[in-house]
Image (cartoon, rainbow, N blue to C red; front, side, top):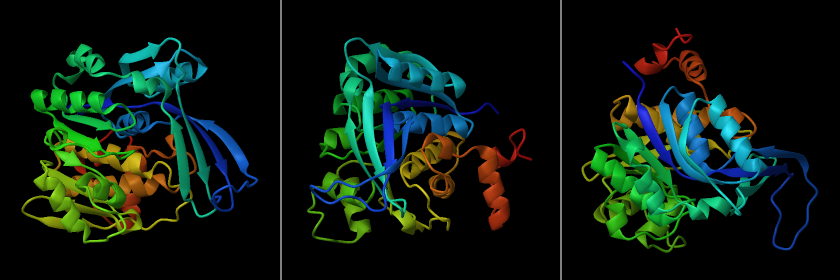
Length: 322
């Protein structure tokens, strides 16, 4: 059986990372160490994550006409990602993310979108051939909402599963949420999308149902160390996180979304797909950096063997993973 074809529509941003003992307070200056220049951007990370796990990936994005943009294209060539619809934008810098990671693996990020802000609904329409025969369309909100909306509309028209990872979060109308088959917010993002005050806590399941009432088909809410909550109109299921020593949490959400998209692309039902995503996201926090931490099939298989869990058929049957 050929691997699933996944279309990722999203951002690329070069990540400039530094480590500190603790995250700084307002107006505070700290000394850091370990400065790195890395590949980044949620869309790009998720595209690479899907490719690493064995999917055929097409990426739709905008990069700057600069050295950071060339750095991105070199990555995609190495990961065998189709870049026919990655456009270089003259006179605009490639997106940049400034990342600070503390000793416990927690992080804060500031993003300048750069060329990502120039990705338009017309770009998506011009890339319509990408969506023919794709299993899953995966997008995020580091690009203009109009572009993400157009991607999900194209996916819905093509009969693909549409996944929206709503980060960085912003309120969205029901007309957009109705295009989402699976929404993957964290708890605070879910509050914003539901129009709730994050300071007035209610059960996560209730917030998820409010999102379903707005038109989302199913919600997979990530809960950090507590795993994830799958909520549909009929059922709620909690999926636990795997137990690992966290070194760097920056890429966990991207690895989770990539694992979810690939599992669904192979035809897995949602619950085992989320279990697989939890393994992919958990393994990602055990290494420093995002791209180096995105797991490969053999790593997932090794974890399954060590933990005594049955690996997914599409992983166990891959060459080199038997």
